[in-house]
Length: 399
View (tube, rainbow, N blue to C red):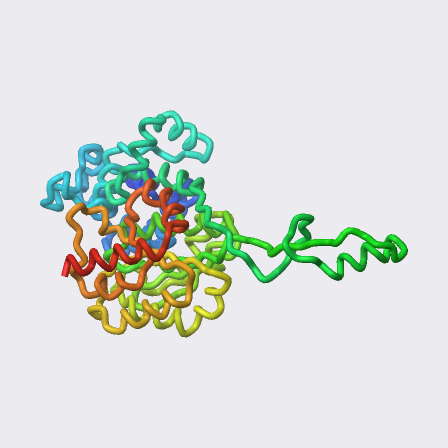
């Protein structure tokens, strides 16, 4: 292979890595071999050869596609790559530029740090993100984050705890101050003492965190947020037991088993392979119907809490959604709706999907940055009926 092309491939691999794709030296060597095999005479063959090497998950396709078409659009790209910016392709201003395009542009300009190794990457991030910078990052919208900020946000997501008030179970445990006498334990005490009188053994009900069920929308309108929220779901799955995770677009997919893997990259690779409707349409009513019919009785026992993450924009215009949402609400202890559209100050429940869902939730909260996720514990332990009543009043006022 010519030296110039090999150097260009190296810079392209660095740009992809800076944009958030897991690209190491091994993949660069595979890319060189792939290009040698297909040649550079056909642009489509060249594209798909690199795509086969660098893209492992469905959510990486858009990043690769944008980076490829910007990086390889000019024969003299090596001299001009540092000055490239996606607005030359998109006519949007920097403030309104698509966030994913902005992340790719940052990578091609070299503004995002290179992840040459786990130790070096972590040292650079820790040095560049001061306390005040981390505070700003916690308030920043996921949609507006650069590649470096997203990498740091993912690390911070792994440290977010989500305590939920424990619920009383049917099982008992020994408790010297318990309200109930334990006859069997008392008899065993008397047998050990030769039949003499002994103090009464007591017991109380066990408490444990309730099951947590997460239903996350991965349709096209949620793409910018679903990537970060999957990291959050992975952190929850590895922080506590009895977490059941589902994603939906036009169909429902159970990803609980996939997210239990400790390595987040391996877990998300498994999710990507299992989900067929990534970044497509949204049929919330169909997804909730599938959950209520197939999974509700299995996972909603013992006071389960449900997190429904969606923008409420339904392809079926809310058909059948109200009935399924009502059934779900009656089956769980709390139903909390997380909606990224609530980040807008002037948000009003106008769409049919939102209006169908809203009467059946206990809380309605934004989910667009780290602070919104960190404050989720308050929503899970808040007085449900009072909050639900205020939501219904808001819905009537917006009608």
